[in-house]
Image (spheres, rainbow, N blue to C red):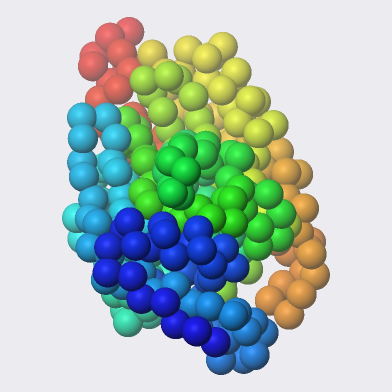
Amino acid sequence: MDFLRPASWEEALAAKAEFPTAVPIAGGTDVMVEINFDHRRPEYLLDLNRIGLLREWEVAEDVVRLGASVPYTQIMENLRTELPGLALASHTVASPQIRNRGGVGGNLGCASPAGDSHPALLAAGAEVEVESVRGSRLIPIDAFYTGVKRNALAPDELIKTVHVKKADGPQQYSKVGSRNAMVIAVCAFGLALHPETRTVRTGIGSAAPTPIRAKAAEEFLNAALEEGGFWESGKVVTPSIAKQFGDLASGAANPIDDVRGTAKYRRHAVGIMARRQLVWTWEQYRGTGNGRSLEGAA
Protein backbone atom coordinates (compact mmCIF):
# COMPACT_ATOMS: atom_id res chain seq x y z
CA MET A 1 0.00 0.00 0.00
CA ASP A 2 1.50 3.32 -1.11
CA PHE A 3 0.91 6.50 0.88
CA LEU A 4 0.44 9.75 -1.07
CA ARG A 5 0.77 12.97 0.93
CA PRO A 6 0.10 16.12 -1.12
CA ALA A 7 0.94 19.50 0.40
CA SER A 8 -1.74 21.49 -1.44
CA TRP A 9 -5.18 21.07 -2.94
CA GLU A 10 -3.71 21.29 -6.43
CA GLU A 11 -1.26 18.50 -5.63
CA ALA A 12 -4.12 16.42 -4.22
CA LEU A 13 -6.15 16.80 -7.42
CA ALA A 14 -3.12 15.91 -9.53
CA ALA A 15 -2.48 12.81 -7.43
CA LYS A 16 -6.12 11.71 -7.71
CA ALA A 17 -5.95 12.18 -11.48
CA GLU A 18 -2.79 10.09 -11.70
CA PHE A 19 -4.01 7.44 -9.25
CA PRO A 20 -7.82 7.30 -9.57
CA THR A 21 -8.10 4.28 -7.27
CA ALA A 22 -6.41 6.14 -4.40
CA VAL A 23 -8.63 6.25 -1.32
CA PRO A 24 -8.75 9.70 0.33
CA ILE A 25 -8.12 9.78 4.06
CA ALA A 26 -8.52 12.76 6.40
CA GLY A 27 -10.06 11.83 9.75
CA GLY A 28 -9.68 8.15 8.89
CA THR A 29 -12.52 7.18 11.22
CA ASP A 30 -14.15 4.93 8.61
CA VAL A 31 -11.30 3.99 6.28
CA MET A 32 -8.90 2.86 9.01
CA VAL A 33 -11.52 0.59 10.57
CA GLU A 34 -12.01 -1.18 7.24
CA ILE A 35 -8.24 -1.49 6.74
CA ASN A 36 -7.59 -2.70 10.29
CA PHE A 37 -10.22 -5.43 9.93
CA ASP A 38 -8.86 -6.32 6.48
CA HIS A 39 -12.19 -5.49 4.84
CA ARG A 40 -10.38 -3.22 2.42
CA ARG A 41 -6.82 -3.10 1.09
CA PRO A 42 -6.44 -0.13 -1.26
CA GLU A 43 -3.38 0.16 -3.44
CA TYR A 44 -2.98 3.83 -2.56
CA LEU A 45 -4.02 6.03 0.34
CA LEU A 46 -4.32 9.77 -0.37
CA ASP A 47 -3.65 11.70 2.84
CA LEU A 48 -5.49 15.06 2.84
CA ASN A 49 -4.48 16.20 6.31
CA ARG A 50 -2.07 18.87 5.05
CA ILE A 51 -4.81 20.57 2.96
CA GLY A 52 -5.79 23.51 5.17
CA LEU A 53 -8.69 24.75 3.04
CA LEU A 54 -10.59 21.52 3.74
CA ARG A 55 -10.75 22.49 7.42
CA GLU A 56 -12.16 25.98 6.76
CA TRP A 57 -15.76 27.15 6.70
CA GLU A 58 -17.46 30.33 5.58
CA VAL A 59 -20.81 31.72 6.70
CA ALA A 60 -22.20 33.79 3.83
CA GLU A 61 -25.50 35.65 3.65
CA ASP A 62 -27.63 32.62 2.77
CA VAL A 63 -25.32 29.62 2.83
CA VAL A 64 -22.60 27.96 4.86
CA ARG A 65 -19.68 26.59 2.86
CA LEU A 66 -18.30 23.79 4.97
CA GLY A 67 -14.88 22.34 4.17
CA ALA A 68 -14.91 18.56 3.78
CA SER A 69 -12.57 18.04 6.76
CA VAL A 70 -14.13 20.48 9.25
CA PRO A 71 -14.38 18.33 12.40
CA TYR A 72 -17.78 17.58 13.89
CA THR A 73 -16.65 19.32 17.09
CA GLN A 74 -16.25 22.59 15.18
CA ILE A 75 -19.73 22.23 13.69
CA MET A 76 -21.17 21.70 17.17
CA GLU A 77 -19.32 24.65 18.67
CA ASN A 78 -19.48 27.20 15.86
CA LEU A 79 -22.41 26.46 13.54
CA ARG A 80 -25.22 25.48 15.88
CA THR A 81 -27.32 28.51 14.87
CA GLU A 82 -26.74 28.29 11.13
CA LEU A 83 -26.88 24.49 10.82
CA PRO A 84 -28.89 23.23 13.82
CA GLY A 85 -29.79 19.85 12.32
CA LEU A 86 -26.21 19.05 11.37
CA ALA A 87 -24.99 20.22 14.78
CA LEU A 88 -27.44 17.84 16.48
CA ALA A 89 -26.29 15.02 14.22
CA SER A 90 -22.66 15.84 15.02
CA HIS A 91 -23.39 15.33 18.74
CA THR A 92 -24.29 11.69 18.04
CA VAL A 93 -21.06 10.82 16.23
CA ALA A 94 -19.06 8.23 18.17
CA SER A 95 -16.82 9.74 20.88
CA PRO A 96 -15.13 13.12 21.48
CA GLN A 97 -11.92 11.78 19.95
CA ILE A 98 -13.71 10.77 16.74
CA ARG A 99 -15.68 14.04 16.63
CA ASN A 100 -12.36 15.89 16.83
CA ARG A 101 -11.06 14.00 13.78
CA GLY A 102 -14.00 13.08 11.57
CA GLY A 103 -15.83 15.39 9.18
CA VAL A 104 -18.79 15.47 6.83
CA GLY A 105 -16.60 14.86 3.79
CA GLY A 106 -15.63 11.44 5.12
CA ASN A 107 -19.27 10.54 5.72
CA LEU A 108 -20.12 11.54 2.17
CA GLY A 109 -17.14 9.77 0.67
CA CYS A 110 -17.95 6.49 2.39
CA ALA A 111 -21.68 6.97 1.63
CA SER A 112 -22.70 4.44 4.25
CA PRO A 113 -26.48 4.47 4.78
CA ALA A 114 -25.72 4.65 8.52
CA GLY A 115 -23.60 7.82 8.28
CA ASP A 116 -24.78 10.24 10.94
CA SER A 117 -24.67 13.43 8.87
CA HIS A 118 -26.73 12.19 5.90
CA PRO A 119 -30.28 12.72 7.26
CA ALA A 120 -29.45 16.28 8.31
CA LEU A 121 -27.86 17.10 4.94
CA LEU A 122 -30.88 15.67 3.08
CA ALA A 123 -33.33 17.63 5.24
CA ALA A 124 -31.36 20.84 4.74
CA GLY A 125 -31.10 20.36 0.96
CA ALA A 126 -27.30 20.52 0.82
CA GLU A 127 -25.10 20.52 -2.26
CA VAL A 128 -21.70 18.81 -2.49
CA GLU A 129 -18.92 20.66 -4.30
CA VAL A 130 -16.49 18.22 -5.91
CA GLU A 131 -13.42 18.99 -7.95
CA SER A 132 -10.86 17.37 -10.24
CA VAL A 133 -8.16 18.64 -12.57
CA ARG A 134 -11.00 18.91 -15.12
CA GLY A 135 -12.91 21.47 -13.02
CA SER A 136 -15.52 21.63 -10.27
CA ARG A 137 -19.24 20.91 -10.04
CA LEU A 138 -22.07 20.98 -7.50
CA ILE A 139 -23.98 17.75 -6.85
CA PRO A 140 -27.39 18.11 -5.18
CA ILE A 141 -27.55 15.91 -2.09
CA ASP A 142 -30.56 14.06 -3.52
CA ALA A 143 -28.40 12.87 -6.43
CA PHE A 144 -25.26 12.13 -4.43
CA TYR A 145 -26.06 8.66 -3.06
CA THR A 146 -26.15 6.11 -5.90
CA GLY A 147 -26.12 2.77 -4.06
CA VAL A 148 -24.91 0.94 -0.98
CA LYS A 149 -21.71 2.79 -0.04
CA ARG A 150 -21.59 4.33 -3.52
CA ASN A 151 -21.75 7.98 -4.51
CA ALA A 152 -21.79 10.17 -7.60
CA LEU A 153 -18.08 11.03 -7.55
CA ALA A 154 -16.06 10.35 -10.68
CA PRO A 155 -12.85 8.35 -10.08
CA ASP A 156 -10.67 11.49 -10.31
CA GLU A 157 -12.86 13.75 -8.14
CA LEU A 158 -12.45 14.79 -4.50
CA ILE A 159 -15.00 16.36 -2.17
CA LYS A 160 -14.00 19.95 -1.47
CA THR A 161 -16.89 21.73 0.23
CA VAL A 162 -20.47 21.11 1.33
CA HIS A 163 -22.87 23.99 0.65
CA VAL A 164 -25.72 24.11 3.17
CA LYS A 165 -28.37 26.84 3.25
CA LYS A 166 -28.54 28.63 6.58
CA ALA A 167 -31.54 27.42 8.54
CA ASP A 168 -34.58 29.66 8.13
CA GLY A 169 -36.64 27.50 10.49
CA PRO A 170 -36.33 24.82 13.17
CA GLN A 171 -34.49 21.57 12.47
CA GLN A 172 -34.29 18.31 14.38
CA TYR A 173 -32.33 15.07 14.32
CA SER A 174 -32.74 11.79 16.20
CA LYS A 175 -30.78 8.55 16.19
CA VAL A 176 -31.65 5.14 17.60
CA GLY A 177 -28.76 3.08 18.92
CA SER A 178 -28.02 0.41 21.48
CA ARG A 179 -26.24 2.97 23.68
CA ASN A 180 -25.58 6.71 23.81
CA ALA A 181 -22.11 6.80 22.25
CA MET A 182 -19.74 4.81 20.02
CA VAL A 183 -22.61 3.15 18.20
CA ILE A 184 -23.68 2.76 14.58
CA ALA A 185 -27.24 3.97 14.07
CA VAL A 186 -30.00 1.38 14.07
CA CYS A 187 -31.89 4.11 12.23
CA ALA A 188 -31.93 7.90 12.17
CA PHE A 189 -34.23 10.69 11.06
CA GLY A 190 -33.82 14.38 10.29
CA LEU A 191 -36.46 17.05 9.74
CA ALA A 192 -36.15 20.69 8.64
CA LEU A 193 -38.88 23.31 8.37
CA HIS A 194 -38.31 25.87 5.62
CA PRO A 195 -40.78 28.70 6.33
CA GLU A 196 -39.45 30.91 3.52
CA THR A 197 -40.63 28.38 0.94
CA ARG A 198 -43.31 26.86 3.19
CA THR A 199 -41.88 23.41 2.71
CA VAL A 200 -40.64 20.57 4.88
CA ARG A 201 -37.74 18.24 4.07
CA THR A 202 -36.73 14.98 5.71
CA GLY A 203 -33.82 12.56 5.82
CA ILE A 204 -33.73 8.89 6.80
CA GLY A 205 -30.56 7.03 7.72
CA SER A 206 -29.75 3.35 8.22
CA ALA A 207 -33.19 2.23 7.08
CA ALA A 208 -32.67 1.78 3.33
CA PRO A 209 -29.80 0.86 0.98
CA THR A 210 -28.92 4.58 0.79
CA PRO A 211 -29.80 7.64 2.83
CA ILE A 212 -33.22 8.75 1.56
CA ARG A 213 -35.97 11.31 1.98
CA ALA A 214 -39.53 10.43 2.98
CA LYS A 215 -40.99 12.21 -0.04
CA ALA A 216 -44.58 11.03 0.32
CA ALA A 217 -44.55 12.20 3.94
CA GLU A 218 -43.15 15.57 2.87
CA GLU A 219 -45.78 16.01 0.17
CA PHE A 220 -48.58 15.14 2.58
CA LEU A 221 -47.32 17.51 5.25
CA ASN A 222 -46.63 20.35 2.82
CA ALA A 223 -50.20 20.10 1.54
CA ALA A 224 -51.72 19.77 5.02
CA LEU A 225 -49.86 22.80 6.39
CA GLU A 226 -50.73 24.93 3.36
CA GLU A 227 -54.38 23.95 3.09
CA GLY A 228 -54.93 24.33 6.82
CA GLY A 229 -53.30 27.75 6.97
CA PHE A 230 -50.84 26.53 9.60
CA TRP A 231 -47.90 28.62 8.40
CA GLU A 232 -49.87 31.87 8.78
CA SER A 233 -51.85 31.04 11.91
CA GLY A 234 -49.19 29.20 13.86
CA LYS A 235 -51.86 26.90 15.28
CA VAL A 236 -50.96 23.52 16.72
CA VAL A 237 -50.52 20.68 14.25
CA THR A 238 -53.28 18.15 14.90
CA PRO A 239 -52.50 14.65 16.18
CA SER A 240 -54.03 13.14 13.03
CA ILE A 241 -51.61 15.09 10.81
CA ALA A 242 -48.65 14.10 12.96
CA LYS A 243 -49.70 10.44 12.92
CA GLN A 244 -50.19 10.38 9.15
CA PHE A 245 -46.82 12.04 8.67
CA GLY A 246 -45.17 9.42 10.87
CA ASP A 247 -46.92 6.56 9.09
CA LEU A 248 -45.82 7.84 5.68
CA ALA A 249 -42.23 8.33 6.89
CA SER A 250 -42.25 4.77 8.19
CA GLY A 251 -43.53 3.57 4.83
CA ALA A 252 -40.65 5.27 3.03
CA ALA A 253 -38.11 3.11 4.85
CA ASN A 254 -36.76 0.02 3.11
CA PRO A 255 -34.62 -1.56 5.84
CA ILE A 256 -33.06 -4.97 6.41
CA ASP A 257 -32.77 -7.30 9.38
CA ASP A 258 -29.27 -7.32 10.84
CA VAL A 259 -27.45 -7.63 14.15
CA ARG A 260 -28.43 -4.08 15.14
CA GLY A 261 -32.17 -4.38 14.59
CA THR A 262 -34.99 -5.87 12.57
CA ALA A 263 -36.59 -4.24 9.56
CA LYS A 264 -39.90 -4.10 11.42
CA TYR A 265 -38.34 -2.27 14.35
CA ARG A 266 -36.55 0.20 12.07
CA ARG A 267 -39.77 1.10 10.26
CA HIS A 268 -41.55 1.57 13.57
CA ALA A 269 -38.77 3.71 15.02
CA VAL A 270 -38.59 5.93 11.91
CA GLY A 271 -42.31 6.63 12.24
CA ILE A 272 -42.00 7.51 15.92
CA MET A 273 -39.03 9.82 15.32
CA ALA A 274 -40.83 11.56 12.44
CA ARG A 275 -43.95 12.18 14.47
CA ARG A 276 -42.04 13.47 17.50
CA GLN A 277 -39.77 15.71 15.45
CA LEU A 278 -42.75 17.27 13.71
CA VAL A 279 -44.23 18.17 17.09
CA TRP A 280 -40.91 19.50 18.38
CA THR A 281 -40.04 21.59 15.34
CA TRP A 282 -43.55 22.98 14.97
CA GLU A 283 -43.69 24.03 18.61
CA GLN A 284 -40.33 25.72 18.13
CA TYR A 285 -41.67 27.47 15.02
CA ARG A 286 -44.71 28.69 16.95
CA GLY A 287 -42.52 29.78 19.83
CA THR A 288 -40.49 32.11 17.61
CA GLY A 289 -43.57 34.25 17.02
CA ASN A 290 -44.32 32.98 13.52
CA GLY A 291 -48.02 32.91 12.68
CA ARG A 292 -50.60 35.60 13.28
CA SER A 293 -52.16 33.78 16.22
CA LEU A 294 -48.93 34.26 18.16
CA GLU A 295 -48.99 37.97 17.50
CA GLY A 296 -52.36 38.52 19.09
CA ALA A 297 -54.41 38.31 15.90
CA ALA A 298 -57.66 36.39 15.83
